[in-house]
Length: 215
Ligand code: DGL
Image 1 (cartoon, rainbow, N blue to C red):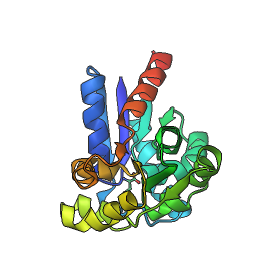
Image 2 (image 1 turned 45 degrees about the vertical axis):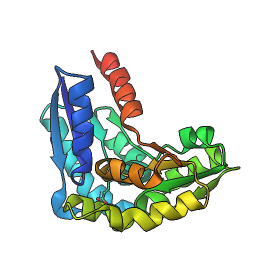
Image 3 (image 1 turned 60 degrees about the vertical axis):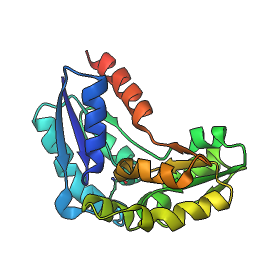
Image 4 (image 1 turned 90 degrees about the vertical axis):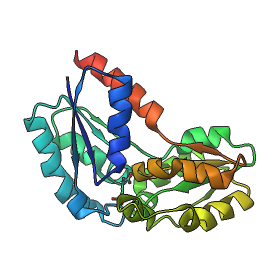
């Protein structure tokens, strides 16, 4: 089965790797819109203009399902795209619900792009699943760009992560696929004080479910 994977950049590669590992035997076609990165500062309208032709191209190449490996796109325009694209779309969004269920301190931190944090979907997740929880949102606005150009290091993210740990966040959500590549650095700073969540496993589970329905 042909599976499309789409992201603005290297964030999607982590999802491609996870699919290759968990669901071998499928053909993954991965498209990244490196030229227009960062997506995480764009408006829903700008994202729609960029993403619709790319997804249409993946359908034309024979993809039977597409993983939107981008929180910024999922949280802003996936509903609209689902009406326009003829194959199932699997999205990725910040794991607010699992984090809210897991926290013991009543404080979680969500690391995501400005576009994701401003989205209706993310704010719905917060007001529905984390209404009695304090949600900290560290400034990660430059992270995706720096991850993309391989210029991020522990020193750069240290202060933001240290701050949320000191404020008592015992769960940290990685809500941007680019942050997969700095998960180990985040864990290093956290040094056992918080659990770090990222959505690879639930996305693979959801994709497997969709694939079974297609076959
Ligand atoms: N990887 C994308 C996400 O999950 C966005 C990165 C970017 O800003 O382009 O939100």
